[in-house]
Amino acid sequence: MLPRAYRVKALLEEAGLKVWSCHLPFSRQLDISVPDPALREQNVALMERMIRLASIFGPQRLVLHPSSEPIADEEREIRLQNSANSIGRLALSAKEIGAVLCIENLPRTCLGRDSGELMRLIADYPEVMVCFDSNHLLKEEHAHFFEAVGNRIGTIHASDYDRKDERHWLPGEGVIDWPDFLRRLQASGYKGVFMHEVRAGVNATPENVVKAYKEVILGKMKK
Image (cartoon, rainbow, N blue to C red; front, side):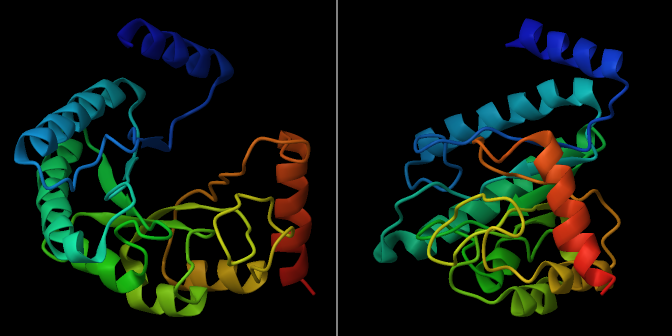
């Protein structure tokens, strides 16, 4: 993995690109909230190693999933506590490389599926911020999320959806009111990049991402 990371770093430098954020790995098994203490320790330790590896890119933000899924209702409370404890530990690792840890809101039964859960996870860590994924909100309106999270948004993942499930469509292909989204994002004091996270497909070309940003988001704001 280390040789591959340095190859990516060389390509970035050749292209003159700077890294804004690194997304820490996730899977059904790689979950920082699991009830098994030994497995949780193993997963958190792996995340710590990934953070140290990410340091070669000099990221300003590190994005972390607070859990995987499915999570049963009877496990939810202990999983929230476990995730919060793991986040506190990983926040220290992020600080060591000069990055800010950002916890991503997630859909369905995952932890952090609304602003209340997300803010609870980071309540004890003022240095930890939020990665707001626009197409993960299935139980809450965007306007309420912005009001509840306020200035804790550290980075975003922008894509569209149908509010039935995450879709990662291009902006304009779903139901999000993008001009309102951008106004609320700016009002929160956010100064970071407008990070798109669209699913690979026929329409998800770099040219179409730029076109959607200019026409759907910026264009409609001017009208």
